[in-house]
Amino acid sequence: MEFLSQFGMREWLIAGGLVLVLSVLIDGYRRMRSERRDNIKLSLGMGGGFDEDDQSPELPNGGARVIKRTDPIISDQGADDLFSTAPETSTELEHDQQDFDSSLAAVSEREIIVIHVRSNSSDGFNGSDLLQVLIACDMRYGDRDILHRHEHADGNGSLQFSLANMIEPGTFNIDDINTFRTPGVTFFMTLPGPKDPLTAFDCMIETANCLVSNLDATLLDEDHTGATQKSIKAYRSRVAQFSTMAEGDTA
Image 1: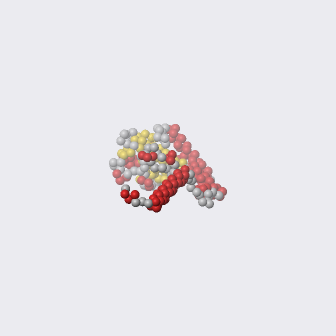
Image 2 (image 1 turned 120 degrees about the vertical axis):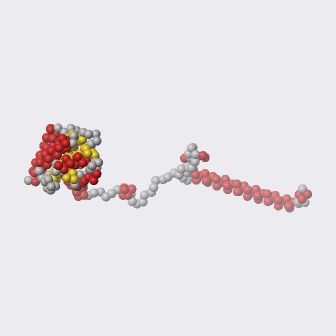
């Protein structure tokens, strides 16, 4: 401590001044840090984009905060303009209505007569046996991989009716017909089609009955219930009525 005894008044004044300056600088620095923290807190409190209440209690330290999103700003083009399509004109609407009416008319002008023949055997029909009876009834394998009967025995003339496999997709594997099996088959006749619809219908029923009598099977109506004489007469009436209507339209 001997060096302190060598300090005079001048040295003590200088030292005191330095201490005072340091105190002022430290106080100023402390005030600046304090004001900076207050400004940060003020920014957060005025909607800076984070919400203290959005902390997830399931994560350590509250987890990540969720940033609040604002609605997107749409430019001069309105939202309705962005998503709407141009309305149809009255001419376009009339054209669409005419197309719809034409489609309904096309459906109403067609009639499909359907009957089924189901095998009484749990193994179903054998393909070769089935084909043998059908060929004897003048049916021929052809278009769409199913069988058809035409007006003439040689396969010429108007199509009378067709026969499909009862199992989807309704086709027959003619290349493997000896091992082919199916629980049943479906006869169908489309009107207009045959030149003589009533004769075609009678031939279709006769062919179906040939399968019933030769292959131990059951004749079913379009709803897969047992066909009766009454239901067969109802089918024939539909064919006759459609034929009459068709003749009236062409007259």
